[in-house]
Amino acid sequence: MKIILTTFTSLFLLNACASQVSDERKEALARQPAVTVETAIGPLELPSPFTTESAVKLSEIVEWPEGKTPTAPAGFRVHRFADDLRHPRSTYVSPAGEVFVVESNTRNSADRIQRLIDEDGDGTVDRREVLIEELNQPFGMLILDGYFYVANTDATVRFPYETGQPTLDPDAGEPILQTPPRGYNNHWTRNLLAGKEGEKIYVSVGSGSNVGENGLEAEENRATILEINPDGSGMREYATGLRNPVGMDWNPITGELWTAVNERDKLGDNLVPDYLTSVEEGAFYGWPFSYYGQIEDPRWAEDSHPDMVAQALVPDVPLGPHTASLGLAFYTGEAFPEEYRNGAFVGQHGSWNRSNFTGYKVVFVPFDDAGNPQQPEDFLTGFIADADAGQVWGRPVGVSLHTDGSLLVCDDDAGIVWRVVADTK
Image 1 (cartoon, one colour):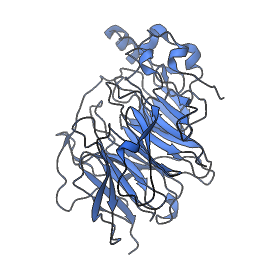
Image 2 (spheres, rainbow, N blue to C red):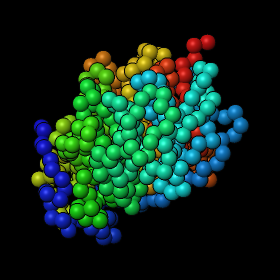
Image 3 (cartoon, one colour):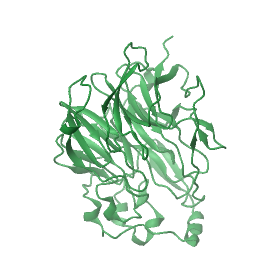
């Protein structure tokens, strides 16, 4: 069912917002039975809200030991592609094979893009060039029809660009789309994806809150994937109700748009699972009123919006609660074994709203010959140094496919871009 949605402000009262749940109500909810929903990969049992208390467990970054790397499955090797970076959040590999890295963070950010150059072809960066700096929390990058697009947190800007051009002229930047700056929940990333024929650009924008508690007027053009023309005109909401969609890519078999979504917090250890899902044009995915279809968020009990809840679609692939599933890349190369072809890699930045760590790894979602997802499996692990002490060596985010078939993984807090290759020895 396709339902074309407009902005939150045109659908709801501007002062509508989520409310607090009383302790008595939390206890009653916790006694309710679990709910089972059918996803594209099978049944998923979800506990009732507040079955466990909402925890806070922050991670402390400790330095990777000399010679240690994340752990990949047998048949793969992992090494440092680039290091000594300032929060490498995402990489972009151009059609010409150029590799660019965004160094960006919520504070003390480098706010720049560098070109990473492997001059001798040994799989390690030999030289870097600053393409542009003094940006505003950039994340998404895209080269299309003679332009280099940069998605800052508050605007997408394009610059004239030719392959190999050493720098972008900041005075030549043309803002083509204004986006709301990050909300208090740090949903500042704005990602970019070109349409399959280059005729459109898709821009992901996360919510400005956990569950709409700041009022829906603060969520205009948020929790959405926007569609624009390459010059920024024709903006519309392609899909809504996606709390924090970051990674985007095209399913190479079906041609569908897919996204990795970071779901809501403060309902307990095991709610709500982040997910990977196909994105249906005009569809609504529940945020902030419900999750996994029609499971109502109790914080909207006084203003539950049943008409919207009834429209909410169930996402395809649950990826675990509080994993911060952010990066996404389908594997369309030929260097990895056959079982990885056309599957999806997802970078999980790791939990903070859970009593035990979850995420802090890259998972792989196989897809069958018809383009349907299968059960996720761990791919790149070993980022947690000491779970009891709350220490981690790194936090993966962006994942991208190099033109040579290797996988690049941004370990932003460690300042490293890892390269994963199939071991042909």
